[in-house]
Length: 100
Image (cartoon, rainbow, N blue to C red; front, side, top):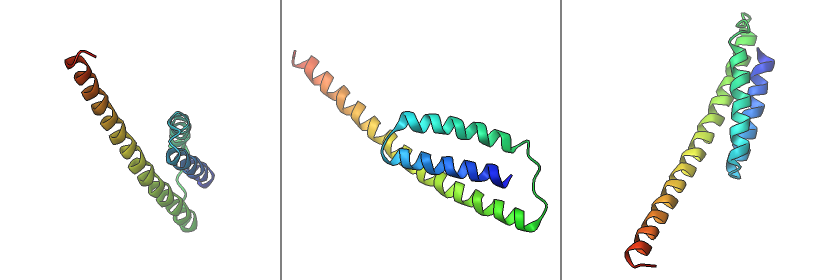
């Protein structure tokens, strides 16, 4: 399980980096890959040794922290897109109203 969680963590880091540079197509591809990998975690037995549990918990916490950062970036991008759409719609209405 630890190995798979580390893979999810690595992909999450890639998603964050791609989000920062607004490579949303790459983000989407990486998210699909991460979702598939996360799905496989459900088939792996949960560790029983406390050291393994603690290690998995630490990696899970890191993943969640990255997810929070990714979510913030994607929400900001969504808001920016919404504002652009509103500006474009307003511009089109003004052009139509003034016959240009």
